[in-house]
Length: 183
Image (cartoon, rainbow, N blue to C red; front, top):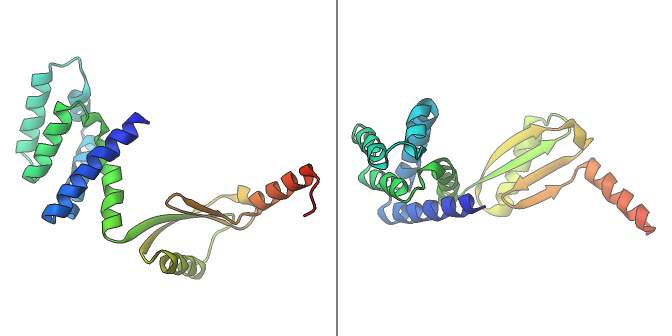
């Protein structure tokens, strides 16, 4: 839980800087490239976060790598700050949360639909359009299948979950019958 709070704090600070200087999208791309570097060069990430190595030597490694990149001065300073504050290990979470904040700035909201069966493209488009009208934002939709739902769909939009699955309706009906109430 602390990791999430730390990641959010740093991501929010960077997005504020990005808004101020109009470089929010660039910083998003730069964070993505650093996470990509961590993904492809696992030893680089391990060296940076491993306390068994000398801190000054680890910082020199980071500085040499940053000098060889075309990252903005703000991003280089941000990464050095993360290292100095012993937060570099949270970079993936920071980048993920920053990406969500950058999408929000652009008016983009991520949503997901889980259905029991495969949905037609027409049905997906209608759901996407309805969600877009409700929120007033562009929707990026992730569609999944889960045969355990029996029927219907479960839509997640941020923290909001709209559960129209047959499975949930049957579970609710069972609970109602257990209580002895009329349906």
